[in-house]
Amino acid sequence: VDIIELPARQPRYQPMPDGLEAEVGAVLSAKYPNGLYSHQAAAIHSALAGEDVCLATSTASGKSLVFMSVAADLLRRCPAARVLALYPARALMQDQLEKWRSILDPLGLRIGYIDGSISPQGRAEILRTNHVILMTPDVAHAWLLSGLSNPDVRDFLANLQLLILDEAHVYDGVFGT
Image 1 (cartoon, rainbow, N blue to C red):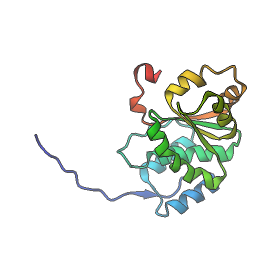
Image 2 (image 1 turned 30 degrees about the vertical axis):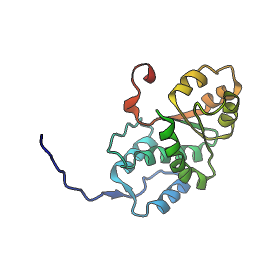
Image 3 (image 1 turned 135 degrees about the horizontal axis):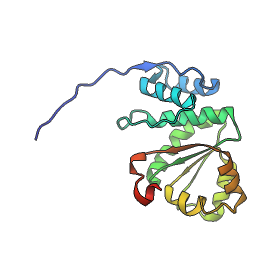
């Protein structure tokens, strides 16, 4: 057995990416006056350029801020758009809810969540009244994709422009289909 200790590195900051919607940039600048980490700025830039992004960095390195910023940018530019963020566990989804709100609330954007604790009767209302929906994959499989006869489900899916898979490494086998 051996122990390897890696020395800490100084953070590398970059300014807000060009092309970020002005109010989204203002919210981020207020929250992060030193700028974004270089990997965050690069990932946001790529996503704004229309590229698919898979960000794999260490825990607590700011991955969530990337997809939240891109979602906010999209929704400010296209208010009819909808965003679906899949989280593999209810606890993680609940933990991320406040982070989402800190970005979306100042922009007047609404967020809701649907997991097994939400009755099937209340789910359509959540789809109808929110821009961003956090959901567990089991609910997406068992309810959302089987509910195409529901007009609210159809409208949500017709306007879905961004799909986020948080913790993508856990979506395998049947769970990942």
